[in-house]
Image (cartoon, rainbow, N blue to C red; front, side):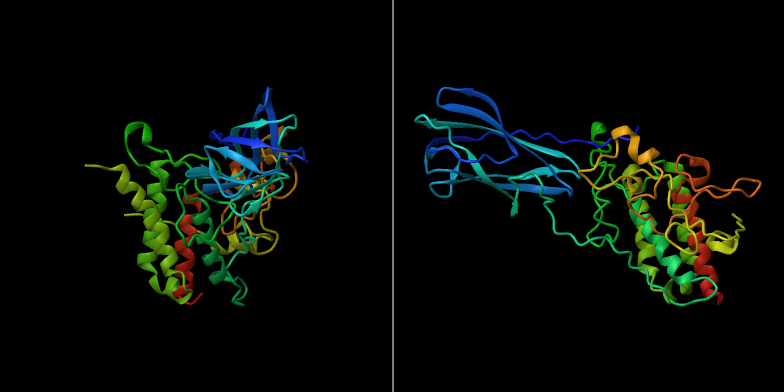
Length: 357
């Protein structure tokens, strides 16, 4: 079963208040009460990752004094610039309120990083929805230039670690595996996930890198004519940078590109051509955006519909020996995607373009 990580940061907060009752925010729950004080917890979920938190609590009456930053009589601020929250994680803040009088004061508004967090429905981000940037060029019968561009979107989607600022596949692909190597005192973040899971295999990644670099070296004009040279170099460098971290101290291939792109009646490249795969065996593209659950009832793996996210440019495993193929996410043999699958056809596409289609 696929599982989503959950982050539970706990921080302290202290107020001394006097006042009258009001409607408490939905994200605030009372944990424990005593005479003239109570312990409470803020709980909400984020659809997008973020680093650093700035929370402003608004109370229903003036504040007398306290140990937290008092903005004015009714507003209290709490910050943590190092807090990292991943996609879909629940965020918890514990705090304690002290007051005098008979009426329990309430948190009536919560501002978290500039967003209204009181009802728990915030997304904590203003990112534009993902739109794949590879435009059609009109080349017939197959748009080799567009699908070459898409092939590099797939490599971006397979990146592990912290994606670079120019990452185009977002926001559904973000930081991941940030502690790789930490148990041994090394920084082994980066590299590529081999397929649709969360494993980085060294030998397949090395093969992917060699073949990608080979295509770039042998058919440079194919990449240059389509504006893909820098993306190709970035794809190679993402792997070589990882290998440099991990190390301290003749080939022939024949392929039928047009068959992959759709001459058989449908494309085997996700997001490209006629009747392409829509249920690729790939973990993150199969999961919905939070707060919808991917793990509940094994939804992401077993639901019959298309993957919520289109993994543009990825090649699936392809047909069986008898030529049959079914677009079935559960059939990983014929529907899994992988970096080493795509490395060969990326170079072949550049060769076709350079040699004049």
